[in-house]
Length: 83
Image (cartoon, rainbow, N blue to C red; front, side, top):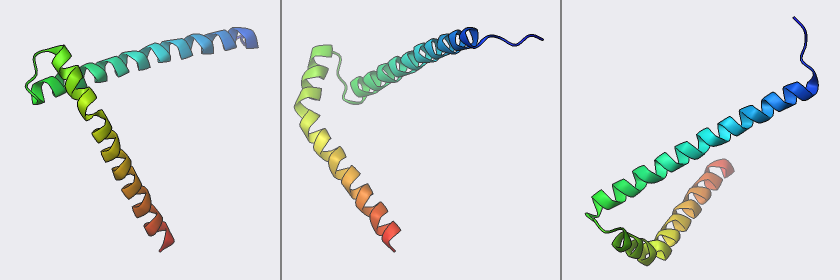
Protein backbone atom coordinates (compact mmCIF):
# COMPACT_ATOMS: atom_id res chain seq x y z
CA UNK A 1 0.00 0.00 0.00
CA UNK A 2 1.47 3.33 -1.05
CA UNK A 3 1.83 6.12 1.49
CA UNK A 4 -0.08 9.32 0.91
CA UNK A 5 1.90 12.45 0.38
CA UNK A 6 1.89 14.97 3.27
CA UNK A 7 -0.12 17.59 1.38
CA UNK A 8 -2.85 15.08 0.59
CA UNK A 9 -2.97 13.98 4.22
CA UNK A 10 -3.06 17.61 5.38
CA UNK A 11 -6.02 18.26 3.08
CA UNK A 12 -7.85 15.22 4.49
CA UNK A 13 -7.28 16.51 8.00
CA UNK A 14 -8.59 19.94 7.00
CA UNK A 15 -11.76 18.29 5.65
CA UNK A 16 -12.16 16.35 8.90
CA UNK A 17 -11.79 19.58 10.88
CA UNK A 18 -14.51 21.24 8.78
CA UNK A 19 -16.85 18.29 9.32
CA UNK A 20 -16.22 18.35 13.06
CA UNK A 21 -16.80 22.11 13.21
CA UNK A 22 -20.12 21.65 11.42
CA UNK A 23 -21.05 18.88 13.83
CA UNK A 24 -20.10 21.13 16.76
CA UNK A 25 -22.23 23.96 15.34
CA UNK A 26 -25.22 21.62 15.07
CA UNK A 27 -24.82 20.45 18.68
CA UNK A 28 -24.62 24.05 19.89
CA UNK A 29 -27.74 24.99 17.92
CA UNK A 30 -29.59 21.98 19.32
CA UNK A 31 -28.58 22.89 22.89
CA UNK A 32 -29.70 26.48 22.36
CA UNK A 33 -33.08 25.34 21.04
CA UNK A 34 -33.56 22.99 23.98
CA UNK A 35 -32.58 25.69 26.47
CA UNK A 36 -34.93 28.19 24.84
CA UNK A 37 -37.77 25.69 24.84
CA UNK A 38 -37.12 24.83 28.50
CA UNK A 39 -37.09 28.51 29.45
CA UNK A 40 -40.32 29.23 27.60
CA UNK A 41 -42.07 26.20 29.10
CA UNK A 42 -40.75 26.73 32.64
CA UNK A 43 -41.68 30.41 32.74
CA UNK A 44 -44.92 29.75 30.83
CA UNK A 45 -44.05 32.28 28.13
CA UNK A 46 -45.59 32.18 24.67
CA UNK A 47 -44.25 35.43 23.21
CA UNK A 48 -40.62 35.57 22.07
CA UNK A 49 -40.36 39.31 22.72
CA UNK A 50 -41.63 38.80 26.26
CA UNK A 51 -38.99 36.12 26.79
CA UNK A 52 -36.27 38.46 25.51
CA UNK A 53 -37.43 41.20 27.88
CA UNK A 54 -37.30 38.83 30.85
CA UNK A 55 -33.86 37.56 29.87
CA UNK A 56 -32.57 41.13 29.57
CA UNK A 57 -34.14 42.03 32.91
CA UNK A 58 -32.48 39.15 34.76
CA UNK A 59 -29.20 39.09 32.82
CA UNK A 60 -27.15 41.08 35.35
CA UNK A 61 -28.61 39.15 38.25
CA UNK A 62 -27.70 35.85 36.56
CA UNK A 63 -24.14 37.06 35.91
CA UNK A 64 -23.74 38.01 39.57
CA UNK A 65 -25.08 34.63 40.65
CA UNK A 66 -22.75 32.67 38.40
CA UNK A 67 -19.75 34.84 39.31
CA UNK A 68 -20.51 34.26 42.98
CA UNK A 69 -20.92 30.51 42.44
CA UNK A 70 -17.65 30.34 40.50
CA UNK A 71 -15.79 32.25 43.22
CA UNK A 72 -17.19 29.88 45.84
CA UNK A 73 -16.04 26.85 43.81
CA UNK A 74 -12.59 28.34 43.34
CA UNK A 75 -12.18 29.13 47.03
CA UNK A 76 -13.40 25.65 47.98
CA UNK A 77 -10.90 24.11 45.57
CA UNK A 78 -8.10 26.25 46.99
CA UNK A 79 -8.96 25.29 50.55
CA UNK A 80 -8.92 21.62 49.59
CA UNK A 81 -5.53 21.91 47.89
CA UNK A 82 -4.10 23.95 50.80
CA UNK A 83 -4.89 21.22 53.29
